[in-house]
Length: 305
Image (cartoon, rainbow, N blue to C red):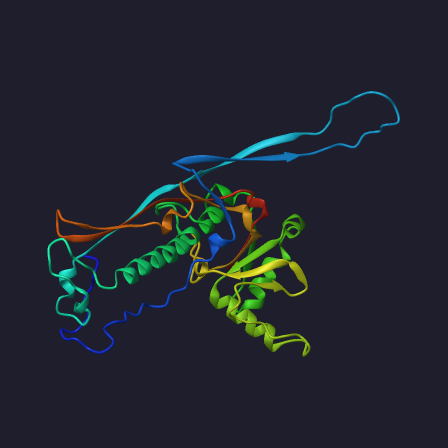
């Protein structure tokens, strides 16, 4: 049963308002690549070209250089969210004024609040899982793939000894970013805690003529390099990798990270209806989800030793 009733058996004030718990929102999908139309497994195909400069002072045509095609596989898992609501559970609560006890006119008070709350919860859970899922979950997340999956081949590793600060985490990621990633525009993903602590460090040091950083910002530039954005994501909050090491930062060009699904945005689409078969309101969401890393050698992974 979806409704856990912790309300007292009386009607109190403000029964026309239902407050919802604040949660950290999903951010990662706003930055990375979305690959739609993935039903089960699909292939990401890449082209790498090399050329050779030749002496053109004489006639002739000599072919030289390679165009190499390669691919990586992305596999998605079918995911569903199912809930039921019995409006009769609210009969003795403070929000019973919204109930209609008449066949064919059944109501669930604050229906929109329940639906919004569930969609928010789905996005929060998805944000966590695309980062932290391991091999035993429905689909592997970015950290697992970088540390233990096939994408671990070529990834750039950076570890920090005990006593590190937020600035050490972000500097470690920045210092190992390949030039090609910097030229594409790099993103250093960190937890919200690391982001807040980094802003505190920046605001406490250097330059009286520099404006204060805002810890509420969606992103900030790495000081001195406008090519690099620092982005806080809830999916890295408290994250650990398959070696039980704290996952501290993940840096690459954002579109190097791929989220596969069937219908883009389907995690935000729900069906809600009243079933006369069993006298219950029902809620359903159905979507595919999976992750892949296009070029593992262009990822910097920072973790605790």
